[in-house]
Image (cartoon, rainbow, N blue to C red; front, side, top):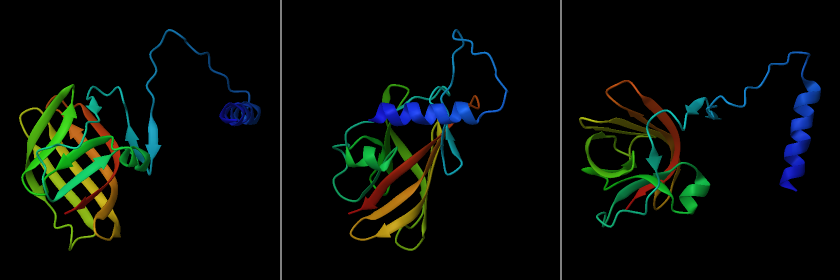
Length: 162
């Protein structure tokens, strides 16, 4: 069924196009660009962010995020912190425990912000509060920059709570 929908969509796109045709070079390496609320993620941007299980070091209050609601529900986290001092991520194949520099007050603010920086990465988490129940749900972005200027922005979905 999915294939029929995809095929039908492709046919509509081709049928609606004007006479502008560009040759496709099958030997070139293409980059997939995903858009979500004007946020662009380039998977081949030079910073590999992998999911990981919830860190055993976190015992109480925490914030944890995945790339999407579906990944969040399947516990495919790309970021977790202990709501105070340490953030955990798996970047470029290495599991890292990074010192949080700053974090907004999630109970007061409608916007979540977190800043993390070390010699290899500058990480920024920004999100807006979706729901406030036992845990606060957020939707936003995670931005990672390397000193050489390489940058990737990833949409995130997750929660903070105790």
